[in-house]
Length: 224
Image (cartoon, rainbow, N blue to C red; front, top):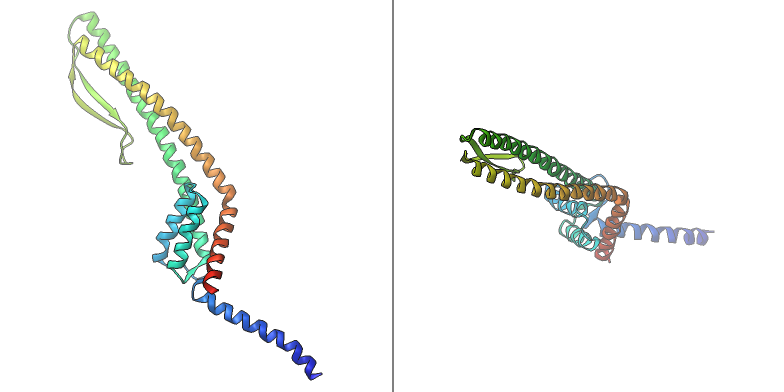
């Protein structure tokens, strides 16, 4: 009977020993559980999240993720993956917001230029009737590049004669045509950004699995 009990206990002892040794090999490299992400790790995780949000190839994402695991041997896998996915969603939303802003800015620019054309045409009509100069400011219209100003209007001089006002109107109409082309591209960009955002939401579980599988492969390699 004692021999029989010893035979039963032997596999259990061996199993416990294997689990213990495995836990030791994993504890020195990557963790699972509630350990918070360190500040030194967060920037790298955000960078990977941005890559995912921008739709970078899986191979690039995996390579960056592998390097992160190797560089931060105590990183918490579960929390790290959650951080990456969160940043990916934020990046996709930033892309959508940026595209929306460009559409809005194009619309505002078109309104301002159209209004200026109408004002210039009224002045041109008055000059034609009175044969007297009609002074008006020559303006330039452009979108702000720093993200703060949606529209920048600058005064670049004065015009008054029929030829000057006609030339001014011609230039504004050419700009209006370019704005129309830009608006079409901005709308396409917005639709693409919305589509990519929807695709990302649908594939987040696949991305999570890919990151998890990659992490486990790295851990097994280290442990082996």
